[in-house]
Amino acid sequence: MPSLGLIIEATLVMITLMLISIKAGFVDPGGLISSFAVGYTIYVFGDRLFFVPLLIFYIIAGLMTKLRYEEKRLKGAAEEKLGARGWRNVLANGGVATTIVCMAAYTNNLLRPEFLAAYLGAISTAYADTLATEIGLLYPREPRLITNMKPVPAGTPGGVSPYGTAAQLLSAFTIVPATMLFLPTGDWSTVFFNLLVIVLASSFLGSAFDSLMGATMQAVYRCKICGKTTEKRTHCNTEAQLLRGIKYIDNNMVNLIATAVGAVIAYMLVYSGAISFEIS
Ligand SMILES: [Zn+2]
Image 1 (cartoon, rainbow, N blue to C red):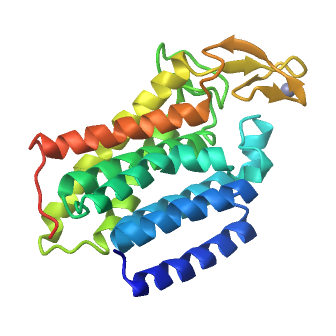
Image 2 (image 1 turned 120 degrees about the horizontal axis):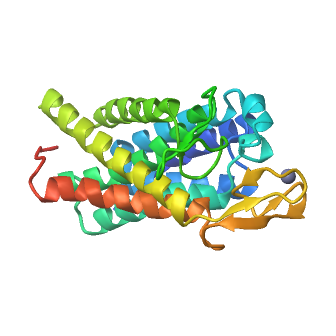
């Protein structure tokens, strides 16, 4: 059971964070409630060790979504509502991580390396993918589709760019130091290096899987009014025409599946013995 002190701390930190989120426009009302639920659950059950990496993801992804928003909007590829995330987006990015923390806490396995690895695999995939999209959109040329490497319009699901790939490194090099802050370990350098390998491998493969699903299965539409390619079912206030993919597979579902893939890869890297370290 979490201590009263931790519950009070989590409540105060989460209320402060939610006030900042409203002020900064990181989330819409639905996104606010769901991010409170995700953050509070992870804080209370996973303590600071699990909460701080999530916090880094939330703040940096929020800021990067806002970064040069007007430029992304002109490309027709910006998030809607000035980049305020809705509840579907929050649960797609945080649902798997929350489940892992609850399972690990319930089975008393929070400090088993494979559970920490799986958790980091899930959130670093979501984080890397978000940064790859938001920073990738600033790439001056067209991204290329991951399947055939042909240039596609900015914002096309499955599109990859050098900026996006560099952004994945940024995600790993911020989330691993954040994890180290509250890690009860004496062997700092070994754990840091191992976590970095796990996060780089799982987020890179998880994001690649995300792009592959984005390029093949995710529904892509064409706007009947402005002619733009979009992943939204409606554009210019009109129902758009399905161009490729499966109608019910949207970006959020692809993200949710990709975070699960990232978690499984990270878990297996430790469980198989390929990477081994102690955290307590
Ligand atoms: Zn349109």
